[in-house]
Structure formats: C-alpha cells, structure tokens
Length: 307
Image (tube, rainbow, N blue to C red):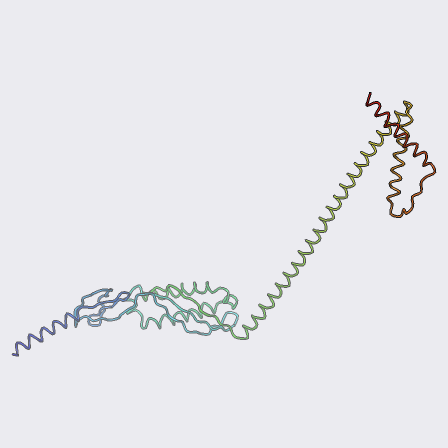
C-alpha cells in the first residue's frame, strides 16, 4: 500500500471513530451533562444524542429516578434529657441535573448529613413522650426543613421516614412497668364498673318483679272482690225470690233454701282434711223433710210447665 493509501485508510478510521465518539445513547431514567473544555454546556436526555467529539465530553451521569438513602443510626438527646437512638430513610429525586451535578459535591453524602443534622435539631426540641407519639409530625417537619435546604441543589426530597426510635434499656423497662400499671388500673376500673352495672341491673330486676307481683295481687284482689259482689247479688236475688214465695204462702220455698245451705255446709265439712268421722245433726229428719220440700217444688214446677 502506498503512502497515499495509508493516509486515506487512517483518515477513514479517524472519521469512523469521530462518528462513534459523537453519538451518545442515554438510557431511560438517566441524564448526562456535557462539558466543553471543562465548562458545562448542556444536558443529554434519554435516547440518541450528538456531541462534538474531542471538544465535548460527558461530565456527570445522573440518575433522575426517585432514590432512597439510609440515614445511619445516631444518638439524640431529647428536651427532657433522655438519650435515644434514631435512624431513618430519605427519598429524593433529581429535578435539575446541572444544579445536582455542579452545585454540591457528593450529593448523597450531603443529603444524609443534612438529614442527620436536622433530626438532632427537630427531635432534640421535643420531650420523649412527644418523640414516641408524634412520629408523623416529626417526619413532616423534617421533610419541610430538608426540602427547603436542598432546593438549590436541584433535587426534590419527597419523603423522610424515621424508621426506629430506641430509648435506653432502663427507660424501656420503666415504660413497660408504667404501661403494665396503667393496664392493671384500667382493668380494675372496668371490673368495678362491671360490678356496679350488675348490681344496678339486679336491683332494677327485683324492683320490676316486686311491681309486677303487687300489680298481680291487686288484680287478683279486685277480681275476688268482684266475684264476692256477684255472689252477694245472686244470693240477694235468691233471698228476694224466696221471700216473695213465702209472702205468697209457699212454705216449700223456704224448705228449699234451708236444704240448699245445709247440703253446702255438709259438703265443706266432708271435704276437710281432718274430718275422719262426719256427725249428722239432730235435725237430720228436718233436712230430709226439706229435701222432700224440694221434691214437691219440683213437682209443682213440672205441673205448671205441663199446664
């Protein structure tokens, strides 16, 4: 190969290399900064990009997807002088690649240190009880402070989460005893409330039972009185009828009346539990006569009906 041929071949190889060096492929979720003689000139977005070879070069390769950083565990002294160990995580996303590349050195390290500093500031201004019960408030306050501080770096802090708050062992044991005592107190109160409610319900039940019993006895007495009244009325009418019959000269009517009362008395005497022997009265013959009067009355009634 002649010298001219070698020159042409080298020129072709150089041209191919220049084309290769000028084409830059950026993957999705990434952005590249372009520097010309060490000065930032532009940003390459995902896809194929063309730069001027040799003059331009890729400066920083930045991941613009949301990223998470672990915040190392550290000791924090609370407002009431309790020492606790705290760790967490922070989520952020690069919104402005040139600022993230050139406004701060070692972006991740800067973010972690900023979060740790603000954790000590925010949590150190709170009591231990607030620290353990207001974790959401702590996260919100840290997010507000850290996001404002990192805005010049071209990033957006989306979340800060406190993962663990670990008080000293003796303090944990004290808290456990306090919690146990509180639960025992609540259990005793609930048990006393239960007994109280049971006594109230039992007394109310007895009251209702007494009222119902009194109402039952009153109803029974009313009905007994009504029955006696009806019986008295019937006896009065019967007596009137007998009196009228006697006034008309019908002696059999009084015989019937006396015999009826006599038979009813005998029935009660015979039904008594302690009556082993029933003694007939001396006037049993009169009773028989009265029964005869009843027979006569029946005959007269039948004769009147036949007429």
